[in-house]
Length: 112
Length: 112
Image (cartoon, rainbow over all chains, first blue to last red; front, side, top):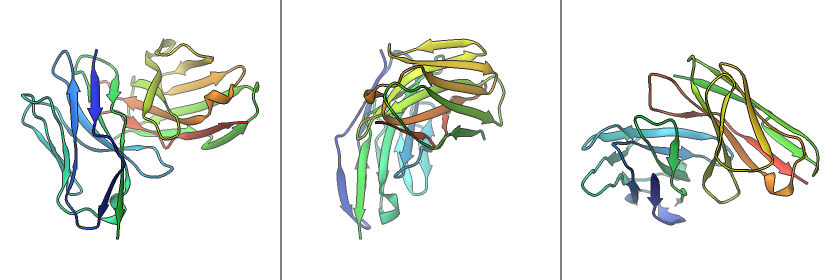
C-alpha cells in the first residue's frame, strides 16, 4: 500500500537558517503530493502541493519539487522565521483514490 | 475553497459517557469526508471516510462510529468513551473535482 516517510524530528534551527525536511513516498500509481502545516493547537493547513513529476510547489517561501526518480518531495526554505515553528506533514493522494496518506510529521522549532 | 466547521472545539468527558462531534462543510457539494485522529505527539490516523450520504468506511476497528446524514454533514460518535479515545480529532473534506483535502480546526477530546 501507499506510505510516506518523513525525516525524524524534532528539528531546531536558528532564525534565518536553511531548512530541509526530507520526505519519500511509496505508491502504486502516480500520486499527488502535499505538505501540510499544523501550528500549535490548530488544524492542518495546506502549505503547498504538486500533482505530477517535476512540478514544484511553493508558498510563503517554502518549496518542494516532485521527484519521481527518487520518489521524494523534500520541503525547503532558504531563511526560516520564528513564526515557521510548527509541525509539518508530508502526504500523498492517489489520483484515482479517495484517501490521503500522511507521514508521521516533523516538529520544527525556530529560535530567535 | 472549502470551509470546514467542527464543534465542539474542546470537550472533557468521563469514561463511559457518549460522544458526538459534528462537522459541516461549505463551498462544495458531494465531497469525500474524513475523520482523522491525532494522539499527542504522533501522526494522523484515518478513522473513517465517506464518499456519499450513508456511505461510511471504517479504517480502524474501535468503539467509535461515524454517520453522514446529509451531504455536507459528518458526525463522529461513541456510545461509551475509553481513556484511549483522548486526542485531537480532525474533520477533512475533498471536493469531487479536486485532489486537495482541506481540514477543519479540530476538536480536542480529553477522556477522564
